[in-house]
Length: 108
Image (cartoon, rainbow, N blue to C red; front, top):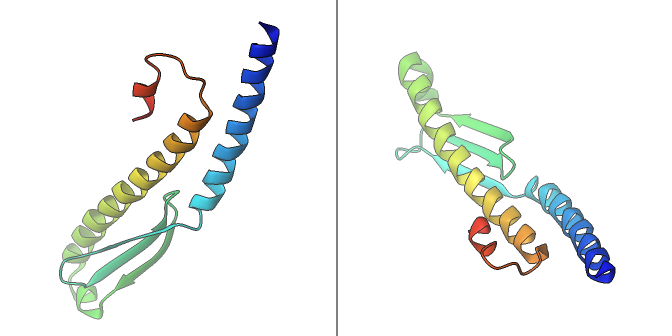
């Protein structure tokens, strides 16, 4: 019994280390989002840290349009990054979980 518990504790620590390594790796995974007309491009990491925003000069003439583009494009990019982040972390976490019936649905 104690061997099983110690084995599970070791597995959980190993999984925790893998999750932390995955979080660091996600700092290097880039997500890009552009407006359909290409006037605005946003790049951020899968950990949702904005790395660059490229704005076409045309948008600088219309403050309201620029604000709208920024909001829409940033929100789309954040959704993409969140999806990548959650998928990667759930995959690592699922690998390290003991096989307990019914728990697999938590990491889909």
